[in-house]
Image 1: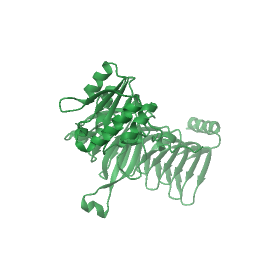
Image 2: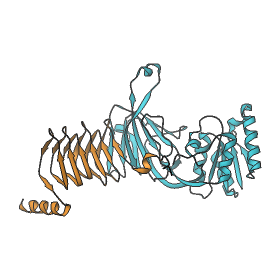
Image 3: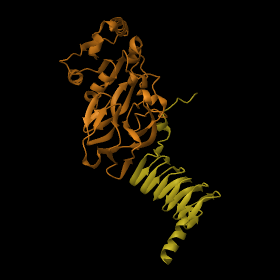
Image 4: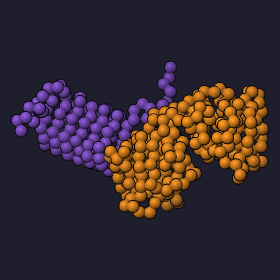
Amino acid sequence: MYFYLYDSYLANRKFEKKLSQIEAKITSLGISGKVVRLNILKNAAELAKDAINKGAKTVVVIGNDKIVNQVIGALADTNVPLGIIPVGPKNEIAQVLGIPCNEYAPDVLSGRLIKTVDLGKVNGHYFLSHIQISGNKVDISCEDEQYEIIPSHKVHQINICNLLKPKIESLGICNPKDGLLELVTANQISSWKSLFGKKKLQKDSLFYIKKIRIKAHNSGKNIPVVVDGFRVIKTPITVEAAPSKLRVIVGKERFF
Amino acid sequence: MFEKDKPQSSRNTETIIGSSVKVKGSFTSSGNVIVKGEVEGTLKTHKDLKVEKGAVVKANVVAENVYLAGEIQGNLKAKERIRLASSAKLSGDIVTKLLAIDEGASFNGRCSMGEEKMAEKVEEKKAKSE
């Protein structure tokens, strides 16, 4: 049984036509199922968990990266695969998974090409894409304190990536099936564009890690950490790779 | 027929220790390592190590092949080959099968070469005589 979860922003009339086309395609492919729309009262993760408890065989989110990141915690450690129908902007996860936008996505869904990907875990909660820390005033301890990474004043941003990498020059694509996380430090490139507020970052270091602990330097003020682009927590954090945790329906044009 | 364009990490987990960081402690990798910054402690990899010009490694190093253009203060052991570029500075002992030293490189230490077992025997003899 398919369970479709619509993000709340799709209630906007400008998405009406696209949604009709998507729904018509879903019906013609014979993959209809139960439909629930998110609103202020309903939490995506809880709805997904409920659906799984009631026997859903596939959970499909319709929306963008935000709703994808919200449901992964409910699907990790289950056999229920995640499907995505990307609509609107900010759909980088779907792009990496090889899922086309709008009415072309249900074809990938019905193809049921399922891959198991890694997740990351930060302070006990799963994340799919990446974690970002601005600045360099942190102590980084890796692999159960085997070694430390000490960033200099030149480091502008620290990222720990599983699936997506942030927009940093000379950075490639992550492999979400290698059981490892990538810790990337980036320096700011000085250019005339930075005068207009446009920062350009360039990769400086790249480490492949399984477990890492980050805390504020010299027991200073705790530093904000952005998880998957929308959730904000504070240091200290313990981040570890969680291999093969999420089953996801992917397309042939995926990046891995 | 055409190899799919895989992410680099699936082909080779190449660690880069950049010029803006320092690594302190016991660092071990299963892939290639490029050092542009500083390392202190021990550095081991099952694959190749490249220490770029300007990089400083204050550690005992073990790798398959080593290309040194920066500085190592510590012992250096390579399973196959070590090459010291013209800007290299090495203060420590070398154990390797093959060695190439470019003109201008600085090397202060002992050197044991040849097959791994022979080099280990020479090291053992020296350790006993000391």
